[in-house]
Length: 226
Length: 250
Ligand SMILES: Nc1ncnc2c1ncn2[C@@H]1O[C@H](COP(=O)(O)OP(=O)(O)OP(=O)(O)O)[C@@H](O)[C@H]1O
Ligand SMILES: [Mg+2]
Image (cartoon, rainbow over the protein chains, first blue to last red):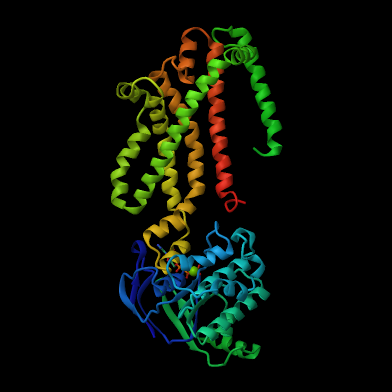
């Protein structure tokens, strides 16, 4: 269980996160919905441990953490394959052949030696997802990974995320602006506002995945009433 | 320069030379030599100018390379330690504001006449733009990239060599382009004071030609110096294309 208790984060004195509490059950997908600038990305950074808290605590973090950043965060001077080699170079243990498998899994087989600048936005996002999944994370954070994608690519990426979640059983937190995406993918949806960040609504979704349009519509309605 | 822009540049140079010619005709050769006289001087003094160009070129290049090495090193140290950055600040500012003409005589006392003085003044002139560009460049990576490295538990060294050093290259090269021109200026100022006719240098040639009423030769040396600065700049652009053109701006 990933537990946040009284977390505070005040970069340059601004209260972005103040006394924030949250518990995430293992193996669940939690979607975080909220307006721009309310502190969603900040929350993910704190959960992933890439930023230090100014107060409170976060317990139950896993050893292996995957993160898909809001922009794909690829090194522009490295090819797709070299970008995927980065975790291993930095000492994160990955399995032999994992890179090639990850490239295949996200459907970039013919693009392994291309530079990020030669890829489309959707392809870059896939590389970013492949890198996050490469280390077989127990905790997976996705910061608006579908925001810049067309509908088909979006569905394709969502399928990849759900497949990975199913095979890894990772605790997943997905930030999104799209209520329907949240309703389609999550076991639990948090509607947040801020700053300072606060939970406005906390909705559990029980329908099993993949969800029918009716299921999704029901959840969307529940979210909009909440 | 883009292909479409060079005819305009050519016309502009042509107009400039024509204007120069007209003014020079009225001013007389002692005040302003005519372009044809300068061209003649470029040819008839070619041995001297070539040897001077070589001397000044070596000093400029050596100064630029030392400035680049020192500037990058100082910027890396500044990134590692805020205390180092604060301690370096007065010195980098000093190097930036010190008038080279004022310290060149001291350099002559320490180093004697010769290429050493010009190399040092070239390095002093070129240091600050390189240092400042490298410092900016090291801070360039997007927040998400830095967070990615933190996520994987990268050490400071790994962050420096696998992320920041690369991300700094575009800014560094633009600093180097500025520094190349300044290195030539620095070398020539150093030569005004720290060189004599054995071997000839561009700085000394300008000085001695002006004093000896050889405005044509002085102008020829100035043109050679301009060519040197252009060549150094072009060399840096070439290096930049080779090293980062593949992924930056393409
Ligand atoms: N390192 C930082 N230093 C200072 N302020 C920051 C920092 N990081 C984020 N902020 C501020 O915190 C607030 C929340 O930012 P955050 O990126 O978490 O928002 P967000 O909810 O992810 O927004 P978006 O949907 O636009 O991505 C913003 O006002 C931002 O300016
Ligand atoms: Mg965000």
